Image 1 (cartoon, helix red, strand yellow):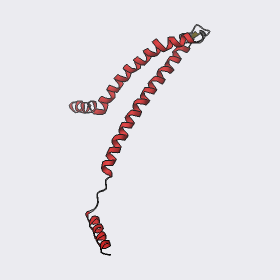
Image 2 (cartoon, rainbow, N blue to C red; image 1 turned 60 degrees about the vertical axis):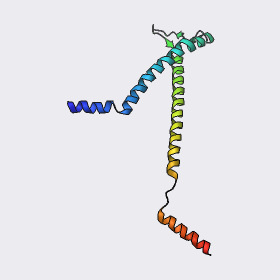
Image 3 (cartoon, rainbow, N blue to C red; image 1 turned 120 degrees about the horizontal axis):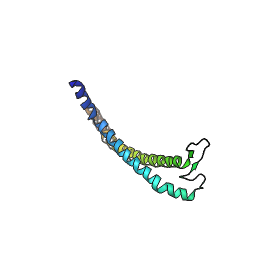
Image 4 (cartoon, rainbow, N blue to C red; image 1 turned 90 degrees about the vertical axis):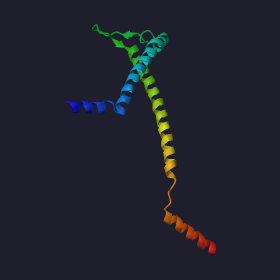
Length: 133
């Protein structure tokens, strides 16, 4: 049992798991913020502009006593998705740009060729022979 607990600690406190849990918490909070923005600000504006028969906040009734087709809820979900996808796209694009800049700096540092001392000596001999001609 003690070994199991030690393995769990090693897993739980590894950097990736902690980063993932922080990302999930921030994502949940951001999702609630986007949902509130969509439901409380965008949906009422679109409901004013929309046709009352299918506008946001309106339901197309179905026979049989069901709730009907909730057009407004579906459009709100689409708006939430688009906002979240756009923000994630911007974040990923920024992170990729930072990673590319870091990789480029590493490549520049490594790209300087290290000459073999024997090759340098041969080049010096070649240059001396050219000068003698």
